[in-house]
Length: 403
Image (cartoon, rainbow, N blue to C red; front, side):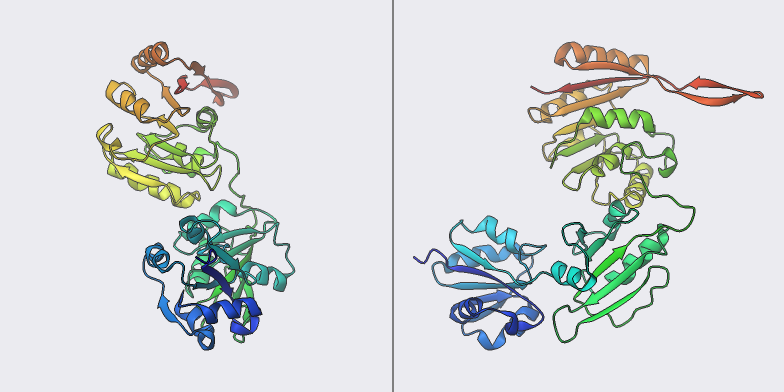
C-alpha cells in the first residue's frame, strides 16, 4: 500500500501556472480528483482520472475517499487548505501518514501582501456559513481585520452592519479573485459603500473607526446594563462580573444558562473567547426573542437558544462544563439534574436574592461543598440637594466544582 495515497493540493486563481511540478504530477496521476467546480476547471488540463464535485455536506465525501485507498486521490482546495479550508476535516478522518498537503498562498497571505499588513497581527474571521454579527466582537480602535466572504453579497452586508453599529467611517477594502487575471481591489468607507458586480470569490480588509462621540464595547465582562433589552430579569453588571469569574471559563468549554432571562451570562461567557459555546434555556418566548436580539447586538450570535421549562428542557443537551442557574434554583429537580449532567471538574453557580433560595443554597453547600458568598453593591443617588449611597438587593452566590 502506498502510505501517501491522499494528496491535498491548494490551487490559486492563477491555476496550474502556480503549481509546482510535484503538485502537477500528483493531480495528473490521481485516479480520482475531487474539488469545487472552480477548482476542477482551473486544473482541467492535468486531470486524467475521475473528477467529482464536493457533496453536501462536504464531510460526506470521507467514506468515498477512504474506499479508494490505496489508489492515489487528489483533493483540490483554495489556497492553503488549512486556513478556513478542508484540510482539518480531511486530516481528522484520514490516518496520519496517509496524506500530504501542498498548499498555495492563502487569500490571507495575498491580501496582506497587497495591503502591506502584518499577517500575524491581523485578526482573521470567516463569514462562510457564519453570522456576520460575529464581526462585532472584533471591532476596536486600530484593529486590522481580514474577513473571508461567503459570496458576492457579503461585502455590502458587512458594510451595512458596520454602519448600523456606529462604524460608518471604517475603511473597507474589497479584494476580488486575488492572484488571478480577474483580480480587482477597491476601497471605500462602510457608510459610503456602493460597489456592484463583486466577484463571488472575495476577501475583505477592515480598519474599524467609530463615529465621533461613540465608544466601542469593552472586552471585559460587566457590559453596561443599558446594552441589554430586558424586562427586569437581568443579572446586573457587577454581579455578572463576579458570576462569570466564578464560572471560570476554560478554552473550548460549554455553558448551560438555565432560566437565561436576558441572556447576559451566556452572552458574556461567549465574548470571553471564540472557542467557548453556550446554550440559553428559557421558557418565556418574549425573553427568548430578547436574548436573540441581545446576542446579535453584542457579538454572540452563535448562542444556542432552547425554549422550554427546566428540568425537562435539559434532556439530550450536550454535557456542560459549567452551569449557571438564574431561575428555578428552588426546584430541587432542576439543581439535581444539572449537577448530574455536569462533567467532573465542572462548575455550578447559582445566585439568590430571596430567603427561600438562600435556604436552598445553604442545603446545597452542605451536600456538595463549594462556597457561599454574599455580594452587596451600593450606588450613588441624589438625596435632596445632596448625595448618598443606596444599596441594591444583596445577592448570595453558591459556587461549587463537581469532584
